Length: 236
Image (cartoon, rainbow, N blue to C red; front, side, top):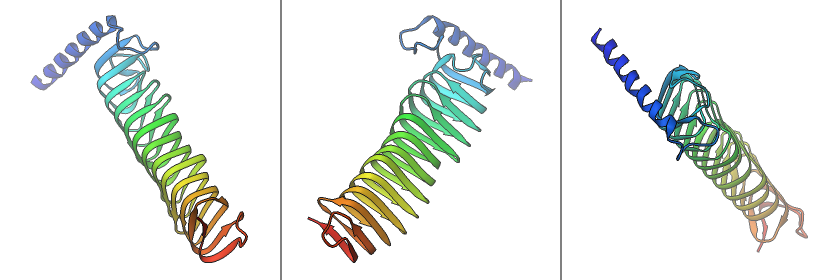
């Protein structure tokens, strides 16, 4: 009974703080009705303070199943999925799914998918990573997929960049990027349209290599006079 009273008292204090925060719009995003230092619940909007995607959280956001904040700065924990509609700054942990609709600054960890249509600056770990670009480090059990990679990307099966890669990509099966500035390393296959750096795999392919090299069983540089070589190929 005593613990129950303590729990109600804590919720009352949090509600009072939230009511005060609602009137202070200096730090809130345009889509929020206010900010709160703590959001706790079962699944948004069944939380305190009440409301899905209506509150900016500067502190702790904890929901047993699903959390949904307008802007998040701090620690966000959800049993299944965590969603941030504006910028996320801090640490986000979810069982199956992390989704940031704006930019992400910090770290996100999930047993499933980490997704962001914009830029992630920091560290991510999960089964699959889908984003516009990663500036930092991504470790994905299955695949890391984005427009651009600026740092380190590790994929259990593959890493894919459909624009450019600056840094290093490591994959169990294949690395693919149109423009490579750095190193691609995999067991089976590396592919680049432009290679400025190194490729290491059983089979390496580059449409054009201005300065770089390939190490593998079969190395292909289409712009070279001798296009296919075993062991080592490249141009300096």
